[in-house]
Amino acid sequence: MGWFVDPDYEFARLVFQRGLGAVYLVAFLVAVNQFRPLLGERGLLPVPRFLERVPFRRSPSLFHLHYSDGFFAAVGWTGVVLAAAAVAGVPDVLPLWAAMLLWAVLWALYLSIVNVGQVWYGFGWESLLLETGFLAIFLGNAQTAPPTLVLWLLRWLLFRVEFGAGLIKLRGDPCWRNLTCLRYHHETQPMPGPLSWLFHRLPDRLHRVEVAANHVAQLVAPVALFAPQPVATVAAGVVVVTQLWLVASGNFAWLNWLTIVLALSLVDYRWVFGVTAPAGGAAPSWYQGLVLAVTVLVVVLSYAPARNLVSRRQLMNYSFDPLHLVNTYGAFGSISRDRYEVVIEGTRATEITGDIAWSEYEFKGKPGDPRRLPPQVAPYHLRLDWMMWFAGLSPRYADPWLLPLLRKLLGGDRAVLRLLRRNPFPDAPPSHVRALLYRYRFTDLRQRRETGAWWQRSLVGEYVRPVSLRPAHGRTR
Image (cartoon, rainbow, N blue to C red):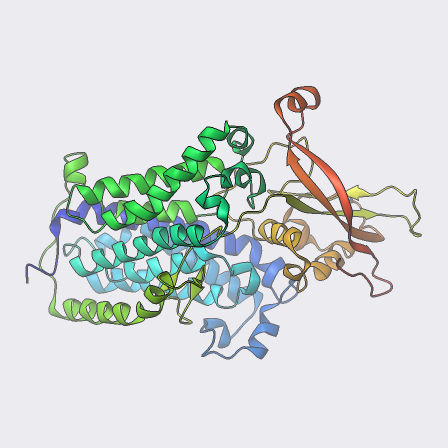
């Protein structure tokens, strides 16, 4: 069945699978490093409590069978090993069925983590990794040429990622339509990077060009992905360049890198570099039947996401099924004009008076010390830092976990403290902690030269009043 496979995309599959393996590797390392303080048995939002109230059918996960911190660690490290094997090309030397099993186990393990991850795993790139990882199961290995149907499903996924993001902007904040959103976005985005100050200080005309180019990349180029080659390759190149621009201007975990990996899956490398990979053999009949069945499944499940694209009430980053097989995507339908940061402080004073000294906890990624250059974090994902940004937008985002976080700091919890960059109380925990709300703004060039600071900040008010382990008190604003 010559129509079933496309040997021209053998090299594209190689690039795609290695890149996806690398993204999986980062994702599992993040899980291994952060699950215990966030989700562990003594974490801020413990998995066992979640499993008690959420049934398997709503959130399928291996952890419904058994949960312990040791088991979670085993799942995470298994994912790390399998992802490293995928990066090394191990699936290509395995039998076809074994290669598919490796990708299926990766997907099932990460699905199990996401489905118990609660707010810590509520980001669009989690569903994107799961949907991409599910399709990768059926892309095969070096034993057979890539199946054409799966290649088209990858195009459909990339189209939804980009076109959905473009539409949500046009339907959302007016600043996207009048080309002014990037006057604010580089400063108010969740996790600025080391170049964000420079991007924010670009002339307004260039900010308008940025927005216009974004509209082209997210509303025009995605349609061209379905065109014949080399037009599809050019469209994929536009996506790659746009995503690299986003990589340079901020930190969005592995969202941009995974989008790049998807775009590289439909590049005709013969046309770009004149390179090809050895073509695989004929596809076994059982494999053909499986790919056909999966294609039908994805087409059926695509109805709701496709309807969402044309809906006036378009949803962002929403999964219509608990397996995250076909999702809807999008980001920044609205842009914050002001940046608010929650700053946590502690003191060893036994009585709270107006003249006591408070010391500030420093986070690894989010803005804190105004003189600290925003770090490059992505593709790594600092989950607590991201949720602290949401907390600055509204206290409702902080309700489930912020007071537990403060109590962990009062108890000197080592696992939680490892999530931070600096603990001002290394010898013994403080007697009280509190949270303040500040407004942050990038300094201008003159202020930067005079003070050496990247940020200027002004106190808005108290976010959580002083908390002690003795009385159970404290409230958000």
